[in-house]
Image (cartoon, rainbow over all chains, first blue to last red):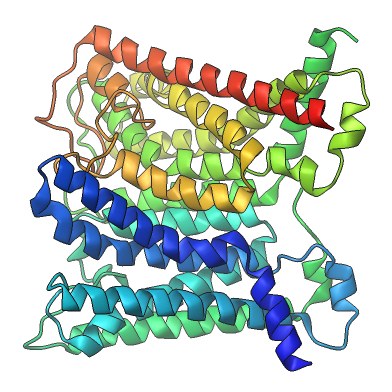
Length: 225
Length: 263
């Protein structure tokens, strides 16, 4: 029975959950080829490292798409299995798949010498914490806003904010602890670990918020226009 | 039924439906807050209170153009798929109104409604700037001119392509592609990656801003030194975005017509 539920949720993760992470990698590959053809070969390392950033975006958008997406929601809510358990299974499948792609990509970057040279553990933390925070915020936004376009818009704005943050602003004490791409200093990595812990803490708080909100059928049934 | 009353009805319905969405105001509010945060914490500070007023308006508009149209496109993305999702397409097709009229109704009605919170956010930012720097009323006039010349053509471009793309894709898949496209097509400097950033089809409207207002804009995708633009090129940039929007809506019209004919 449980296995059947997991299989059902595997089929429900849809195009965004299944192909989103792969699309990020494919885009990186296409742009790498484009850069090589346009004699911009020096940029290939940066382009391929940037693929990880698109995986954070993919995590947020996947979670926003899947947390609360159910055509037969009223029927779903009448079942003995709580809806948040169903959503939890769906998100787990999508995010584990994304993590597999991200870990493989980080491994590829290390093997090809295109990584940040910060050690294998830190390389994995570099994508893990931002993916966790984006996914949890995406799920929370979807449950609170009850609108997939609104939650997509919010995730897009947050992601672009952190992507284009100028260095002068990223250095500010007010901003620095929250950075998704925190500059690690290997000689004194305390700030890096603190930043990663903070991001994971935000992710846990947002996930808890989404978990609680998913337990309120009255809110879930008030859909957007 | 003739097309004009049907179009007016579709525009009115789409406008009212969209403008009442709580999520629309929340997302636009969040995007406005992000821009305000940029100016508030930027060590370089907000644009100085000296120089031509169009500079300040253009810089604010430029920063806004990097965030708000993203929210605009995503909030427009479920207008076409919604009818498929709710299975109301067949009912609507049984009415005398042609699919093209409904499509234009979505473009004009939902597009105008989505632009309202965007314009409100923009004017709030301008008001904040005026209050901080004791700017004269000329700033507000300049802001409205910049909004019309730089931002609105980009929004029309985004709206047109959103309608076309969501005739073919689901809103979720569109949103993923659109956020990626927005980053790649507006922020990525052409020196770093093959991109349409800094080109005439960049939807954030850099050509109009540089060509007509001769200003340094934006936060990333630095085109300074990459090219200089004349006034004529500024107008050309506006024309290309509007023509692109028209092409997209006409193509969406064809796709909607084909869908209807197949049923």
